[in-house]
Image (tube, rainbow, N blue to C red; front, side, top):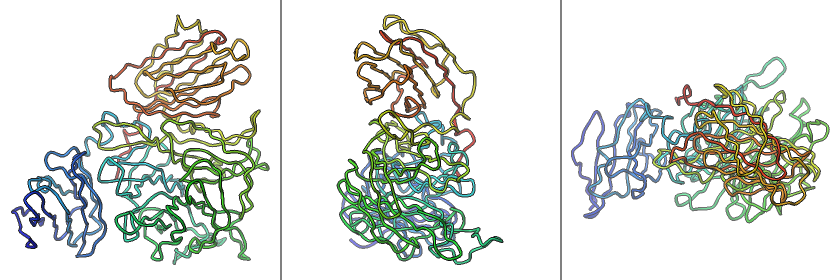
Length: 591
């Protein structure tokens, strides 16, 4: 049957319609004419059958997405932002739902975000790790700093807590900790869904995207475009070939426009994806000479490539990179060795944290060592570093997706790591990449710290760390070995905090967190461990960031703040400081 039959709800300019398809399913639509509010709130039931919903404005398809529409009482509401279409006719059409579904009667319209009173107060909400207010997230994307603001984009499913509908969410911060979520920045379009990529400031307007540049007295552009590169997966609802596209902002990241000539890099091979774009060399000068843009791109298997451009639009391949030992999500950056500005190396990074160290002349990357890794297993993937951090700051700041965590019953899913600072340091085995929490974490320390200076007395007499308060902690520990490790496998250190076990075997030189093992040598008979604990995660940094392990967990038994330490044979004294941390969500609410 093709006849559309209204089934009887008319409210404040909203019309709900259905057309029967069979006894069990119907095509249904929600109509608003004209749009009068900022938001339409869609009822979601996790685990309900998925259906496709299309968004039409004045008869033109804007985008479409899959959603688990709640046939009865919803678990939460997904928000569709419609304020930009004020005065226009909105039609939301659903392909297939059961005839007895009550989803239409649960749709809400308002000028406020849904469940405002409950946001950031959920039981398993990370308290200082970023997670979206609603929906699924995975890879951090488009990390760029501009005019005092850190922009954090992220793979986002705004309409459910499982992977899908890949969109770029957007949040901003001035301190890397307190985030204000913005409207989704990059939505699927005719070129497909929006997979991972990177961000940058086109300081010299090499792209020509800023048609009305404002100049200071020296000729510097005061309003350069911000540009995001991403992988667009085209054709049949994100199942077609992958290409590289871009969007740009001329208002400091408030709104974003798709480049009309997308994609700028067509499909080259298989699922080529995840462009990381950065500037190499000097900035443009009066003679027109300078550097150029470089794009690191994953191709297939364990193969990557580099591309070059003068204007961000026309790209040519310049170099292949192989034998990284992993796939996806490349990053590439230059760092000083041991902080010496005249001695730098380039790092090429892949999705699971393997990296190569080498030289780069703007055209060819020449690996000199690796692949190595700093992070070992656990919940950590698809890390990316910030572009355009000021030279006066000088840090290489990285976020990672803490993949695989569990958040039962929550209207969001997955979180990011704490922001980390990366450095290259010389070790007895060569130059290696270190990662440590950024210094801003220390600003969350609140309340009285627990101090402990004691000696370990074997496994039969574990040392209890008393006075810990809450489930948000920053713990710094230093352990001394009485003698150098000799291979004796009884030289064992054991730490238990909130039920999570950390061990170090001085004989084998292995450290572990929740069974995730990593090699770690003790230097100068000292072992240093830092633990960052949030409500749903623990991150371990050993020996100044030489090794990092991340683990998500859920304290469903609500175990009290408890910690014990034991060591046998070669372990001697322990120094410990445990700082309670405060939540970042008390004042950071989305706009």
